[in-house]
Length: 375
Image (cartoon, rainbow, N blue to C red; front, side):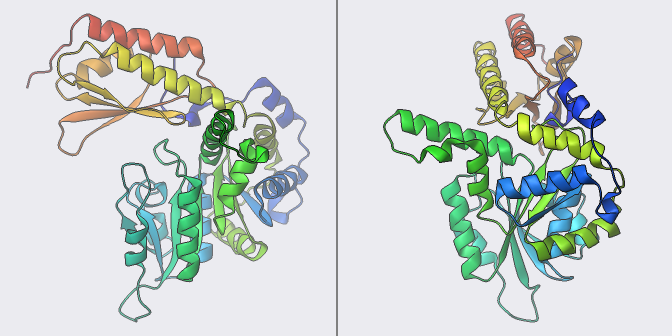
């Protein structure tokens, strides 16, 4: 059953299970789980930070980061579509007493610098004090360019603000940036050879932020866990918040060993996920090419995520057809109810045959003629 719902659905590989079985264990709350300690040190060194802390989820590491930067009643600037604002149940406000200042994202996923600058509050007791600028990379599968992130960092530094990155799919962004740089090199545009290594590219991205949350259970394929990375003082504060939030785990080395294996072995292979997402998008475009009107619109895939907008007149029939072919995707209705937006995600457990199966099923749907849903 091809499962395109998310890259969170992956199962540990056989090699990852072996690493878990062989993991040295201790009590991580006491700081003596050697596997956790090795993971944190390895990730911090890879990404250019002084320290890291392992926690159960990216929602928690984001919240730990935000609460380590901001006091009660202070403000974090976020995007309307950022996970930290829209998809984490309002945790920054409910649990952190942090006021989010959401800004509209541009079509490419960025937030215009002028909008960020104008949202920063003056030092006036009438306003929440702005403390933090948050970014997300990738966002909806789109890569935020490094030059843009550098500009955000310069703005934040000039205005005395810290920066935090929700890097749940940091390595997807890094792998795609590395591919683009390699293409530039081949086309004669000189680029530092080291910068085509996704690990170095990830480090370059992280250099623009005071803290970064990295998910290990999405494209990297570990079963559980995320890391928050930052300075030693920030991570010390984050460990206190982790304990308060119920994220202190005991013999967590079993999970840390899986995550460590993923960081060592699964970064480069993410390029396959991106290739399959692009091939899937191209195949779906061809499958829907002969439809009447624009009943299905496929957005290009930059990394491992693509979106399809299905007209409301065929949305129910299209979803049912996919289910009949054992194809699992997520979808939600647009605000006006005129269409369904489906999200398709490629990952470690999606192979070429799954992509071919999905393309074939969609071709069959449009080849037989669409079934219009009548009220």
